[in-house]
Amino acid sequence: MKSTSRLEKILSSGQFALTGELGPPRRADPDAVREKARHLKGMVDAVNITDNQTAVVRMSSLGAGLIAKQEGLEPVCQMVCRDRNRIAMQSDILGAAALGVNTLLCLSGDHQKFGDHPGCKKVFDLDSIQLLSMVKAMRDEGHFQSGEEISTPPRMFIGAAANPFAEPHAFRVQRLAKKVAAGADFIQTQCVYNMERFRKWLGQARDMGLTKNVYILAGVTPLKSLGMARYMKNSVPGMDVPEDLIKRLQGVEKKDQAREGIAMCCEQIQQMREMKGLAGIHLMAIEWEHRVPEIVKQAGLLPRPEPEQE
Amino acid sequence: MIKATIKSLEEIKGMIAPYRRVLTIGCGGCVSLCLAGGQKEACGLNIKLLASKSPDSDAVFDDITIERQCEQQFLAALDDRVGEYDALISLACGAGVQFLAERFPHIPVFPGVNTQFVGVTQDIGWYEERCKTCGDCILGLTAGICPVTMCSKSLFNGPCGGPQDGHCEVDPDTPCAWIAIYERLQAQGRLETLMAIQPIRDWQGQIPGRILLEEYRARYVEDGEKS
Image (cartoon, rainbow over all chains, first blue to last red; front, side, top):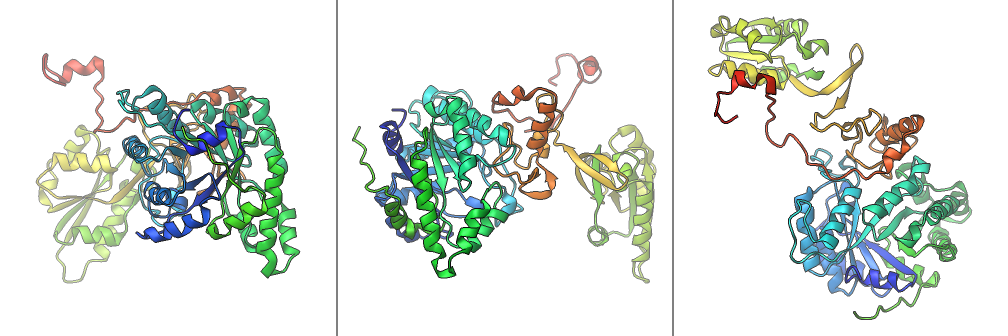
């Protein structure tokens, strides 16, 4: 084992993994985290704690992650390159590891222009691929980016994101390969709606032998309504929502759209479970944590495995 | 070249309000070419300052434009002139403003322009940034398109997940630098360049930069003196 991560244990044992997502609150309120965590406990193997997503200030990923951990969840700490230079990143990684947070997702981060402090100074000292390589070197070679030795290295299970749908399409699997080469142990993808394109991308990854070297978890986000589907299609960068999904939601009454969205999500998960080379699902129920239990149940993903103690 | 834009008249008037005799100094270099701080703009600013002063004010506004404000030999032309004034407005870039202030440290110097970027002239009145002066050029690897400057996240290893229809997610009017790099490298048959992981770099420019060409070193540094 590279780490003490529960997610690593489940993935390396060959079981189909399920990760969730928890968005920290915009206030210093631990109960807001606990409330969301309660819905996710026992439902997912680990839960991503977002890092100031959409560049809006929120409780830190590590802070909220620790609260989630106290509630019995396994946090995946997210770290974006927008806000921290390499000193702050390495410092937070040491802190996280010392506190028992041992799964880290390395991201570039949404541009600050989208957030609530568009006038802030962006950092981007490293990009996400360089961040992966730095964390891997800290763990495997036991040194800081400066080259200085770390006597107790952080044993992190290292994750990265991939967007199979963004342009240039032909480069997307190559970028995945770069992330794997840089140090990614697992990948969580952008929300998948276009199953055909996702199959193609996964097939390319398989053909390149990448699925033998990295665990790929397919991102899914249940559509709550027709409005959300349209918003995802038209306003979220890098999102590919096919027209037939929109039509299907149009075909049901507004009050039934949430139920239909969940049904669509579960069907998608069923299809994904059959895909060769796919290691799990990353379920991003955005501000819908309380609906996760019914989705997970309906998708037939319960009970979740109990990893053996090390 | 360096591109700048002139500050608002309000801001300039606010800075010089306490002073009676003010000299506006234009610069014939970069800022002149981007129509921000050359002779025409120095003259124009002066006219506006004169026109907007109150009838009972005895303020004196003059203007002069020199070849460049970033070279001592041209600043020397001002040595006999500035003594008549209580304050100076420099229409040079930030470097020129500082060099002027350094030469005449007893007179307050105020900037008349905002220095924007190192860029190009697409056409008259249309300027675009191209270089962040990062001090470690990788344009050879990126088909002559700078990801430090042209990618909104200054990524080194390819496009983020956000481009839409070839444009940056941050601004629909800005092309995605990495798509442009990809397409140009592809056209040149050099796509394999993109597969190499660009390592973490040591950023230059962490302290004020200084260049002392080896062949000129002896002129400025005495033997044994610390450079």
